[in-house]
Image (tube, rainbow, N blue to C red; front, side, top):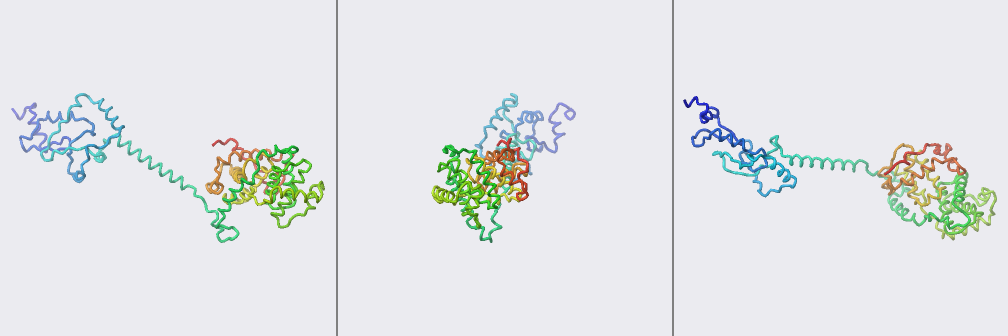
Length: 432
């Protein structure tokens, strides 16, 4: 009988699909006999359909996606990336020969025969998202994350306005303080001496220069002179020796005369000539001091207004927001450099910045150089490292040998026992 024939596909289809059959997204009713298909034909269409949603498929969406169908159709010449094309080529090679046959779509009389390329947005509704879509979304998310990290790094440490607290202080000249230091930075090259000038001297050497300056630091400390006086004194000595040959017997005379000139330029209460004669154990007469004074100012063409390391020290210390300990240790570092002839190769501004950088590293135990310090000094950590390492070496050897004037000076309570601080040895092994 036809009703009990298990091999009759029409009866089985009628019994199991009275509510309709859905294949490929379309709904097929069984109302008309001419629309009815054999179950074997329907199954073949389902099995032979390729599992790759990239191919052209029938636009047969349910009523749930009715609004989305209102979008303008995607053009057939939609660009395909090389990576996606390569993936498609590799996948096509893995498709069995039977699966490469043309797709036979089952027509749906209730919907129009409209074919289009399936949009990427449609796959977001399902779990089967193409690999190239996943890669693109992951790449875009990574780019957004990197941009956020970069913005955080930029805004991490802003440059501080160090002059905002002095706007009402007329002596701070906030209106043109930046122009002043821009001029100092430009003019410092004119006050520097050649690093090898001592080779032009036939009777003195760098060791004699170091002994003279170490002694003058003690004289400066004994007379309780201003800090500016010491730095100007050293500058006058080097510039004079670079232009005028001097015998070793008159080298000390050059030193006391340079300090006398610096006192007249910087000090309010100036020591008299006799004070310098006494401090030099009366090795020179008053006449010799005055004659050397005239020779020195004429050789230097009366140019005493020069930016010394002290000028930059005050500004850079303010940028570093340094406390008393860092300030004293910074001056200890730079005064050790005054004695060393090899430090003449560095400009005054770099010496000042390196001294503050070394002092901060010494007290903190790690490298510290803020964006504000870098902005006002125009020096980065990499630029300061060479000079800073030399300062650490001087700090290690401080107090040994015969030239101990700076060490004794900064071993007193007046200077906070800065010389007794442990050196920043870790800077010697740092590599940028």
